[in-house]
Picture (cartoon, rainbow, N blue to C red):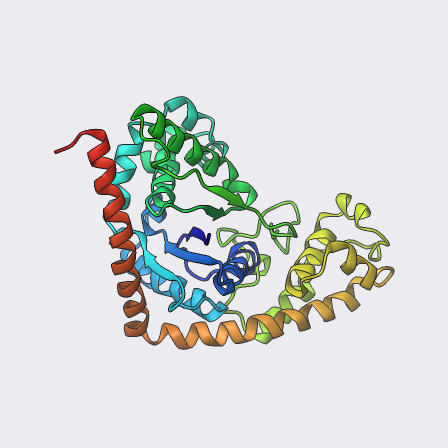
Length: 334
């Protein structure tokens, strides 16, 4: 049987290397596998848990679609749509919020990290969005969901909600319980300025990340200025555990070249970082430059991007609406 893959990406604009290596590169591989049916959602409803500028949000939705395509996702083979265009997501989220339990949400560590000390001032959406994420997945009967380390807990919640709904309403296996797809090799890309922090658009310095729209000169300059330490590259990967910046750069190289960390360490063992950075810059330019050029070209063709979203919305809406209707029948609505 084919796997049905569902994944979502927030339209934050100007996606970076961490987004590519942590998620989109994997999406492309899943898309190219004929044993998979893939659904890729631009999760704009999740984005508004924090205040957004309306014009920027619209532009970012299109840019996310452009990035998908520029990286190699085929819109003819996969469904690509934006979440807010399918109203079943919001309706199902409410129904599932009546099944989910406060204690489950209170255990979500990502909310605690994002809310910080001032929980009283964050939006209710930031607290409850894992339920919307569960709706996103369950509406499409997804069998597998690609997740990073920071989303594993949310997928566990989704599984709990699916099982509780099935049990509460004696619904058998109405909701399929999805399995996680976790990349075996390096997937968590850290800041170029601090190897202990995740690469993020929210970090003030643009030198902390490689954007997918960066040109050759920017990429080379950022890698040249990336933080390292004074020691040469070690002879084995265990020595990297106490050297976060070295581990991060070698991890980026490994992910781009499809090598294991051990293989990368062996290739550069004993060499200094200036030699390694030259090679890393070359590999990055070869990979990112074509993507950057395609993103810029696609961003100028809004009609094409909107057409992809509309086609995806029609397909997604049929799936999601049918599932929602069955949910409503099971619950007892007329």
